[in-house]
Length: 217
Image (cartoon, rainbow, N blue to C red; front, side):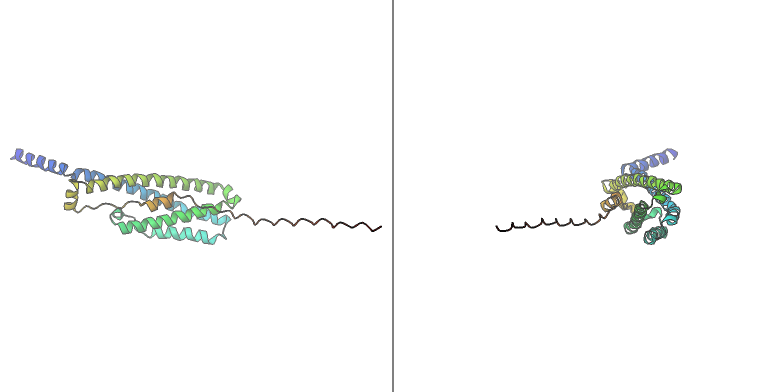
């Protein structure tokens, strides 16, 4: 009886392995881990913003519009539920990424504005926070790239034969991924325009004095 049970279990394991069940599970865990790291870096960026806004406000309090946009963008992100299930809902995923993109854009504008204040740039706290923000943005890029690769492997595993049969029976769908538009928006550097002063028109040349005719003899 024991041998028969072992044989049945071995046969079932062979079937599961052959239909891609195990590989799909491995890929799913990889996606979950990669997404958790993306969320971790997004949170790190959000945690830096209040202190950054506070320091900038001390030197550039009249830049109210820029400061308000950053604060509102952060509040919008904080109000969204970033759960592991988010990647299984394309609409919610797109909404979440738009909010993160808006926050990144507002933060970039804030740092551009800071360039106009030499005293702010010389502040040790600001320099430290700026370095942390830049480092976090790099970590976000790395985490996103890992997530993109993990999702690609998972989506391929649930769409190719014979794994797709298992995925169909189990109800597993492809997971949401970053779009090309997302990548372009995030990788594009902030546009900085310095308006050149209007050129002063050149003065008209002074006309030469008219020749005086010689007196008649």
